[in-house]
Image 1 (tube, helix red, strand yellow):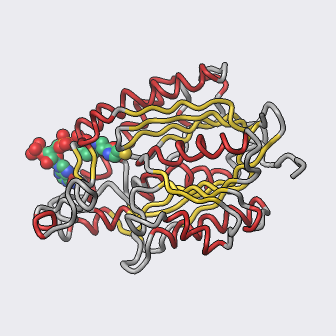
Image 2 (image 1 turned 90 degrees about the horizontal axis):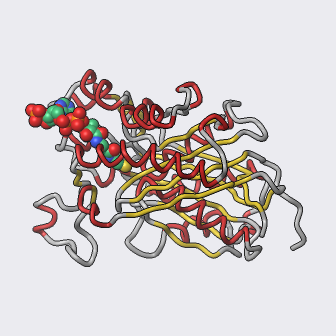
Length: 335
Ligand code: COA
C-alpha cells in the first residue's frame, strides 16, 4: 500500500461579490443579523449561464498546473457536488472531458458539504492500492442556483465556488494518516432539495411549492453540527495516534462561525490555527474546504510536514474528517 498525499491544489470563485447589504434590498434581513449570527459578510455568485462544471474545470486546471500533472496522466476524476450540471450525466465526465483527462474514470459523489472529505477518502483508496497513480478530486457548487431567494433563513448562508486537489503516492509517513466518515439518513430531511428526483419529479406543483430549492431546519442542523464537528475531529486524530497538540492547521467546513467556534473549543485547539473563509465566501458546501486548503497553501500558511485536520458535516446527514501530513512532492513510482 502506498501513502497518499495532496501534491497540487487549485480553486476558483466567480467574480461577482454579493454583500450582506445587497440582501437588505429584497428580504427582511440586515448586515448586523447575518454577520453576528453566522460570521458571513459576503459571498460569490456565479452568472446565470455559468454551470458548476465551469467552476470545477477552472479549479481542476489550476490544481493540475500546481501539481505539474498533464491531463492525460490523470486516472480518476471525482466531482463532489450537490449542484451538478444535470441529474445525469455526471459533472465529473464533463469536467474530465474539458480538462483533456481522456484516460480517466470519472464519477460524481454526493455527500453535501462533506463531499470533498468523502472524495479524497474515496480517491485515496484507489491510489493507495496502486490501481491508480493520479486522482483529481474537485468539490464544486453553484448553491445560488438552488436557493429560494425569498427565504431569508437559507438564502443568506450560501455561496458558489470550487476547489480541487491532485492525489498521488507520497513518501511513507506523509499524506493522509487517517479518515473518519459517517452518515445518518434519519436526518435526511433536515437539509434537502426535495424535488427533481424520483420521489418528487418536476411538476407545476413542485415549482409552485418551491421544492426545487434548499429546505433546511436550521436549528436542528446547527445542533447536529456543533455536536459532530468536535466529535469527529477528536476521533480522526485518535485514529492517527495524535492529539490536538499535534495539529498545525485545522480546516473546518465553513457553515457558521459559531459552529466552528464550538468545534474549536471542544477540540482545545488554538483559534489562530483555524482557517476561516466563510466571511468572504459563505457556505460553499463541498467547495468550502478545498478552497480554504488551496488559499492557505498559496498564502504560505502550510509548510512541509505540517499536520492538517480537515473536518466537515452536511446533508445526508453526513460527516467526515481526515488528518493530512503535508508533503507536496509525489513519489516516483514505476508505472
Ligand atoms: N435575517 C434576520 N432574521 C432572521 C434571518 C435573517 N436572515 N433568518 C432568520 N431570522 C430570524 C428568525 O425568523 C427568527 O425570528 P423569530 O424569533 O421572530 O422567529 C430569529 O431570526 C431567530 O432565528 P433562529 O433560527 O433561532 O436563528 P439562529 O440563531 O438559529 O440562526 C441559522 C439561524 C440558520 C444561521 C443557524 O441556525 C444555523 O447556522 N444553522 C445551521 C445551518 C447550516 O450550517 N447549514 C448548512 C449545513 S452544511
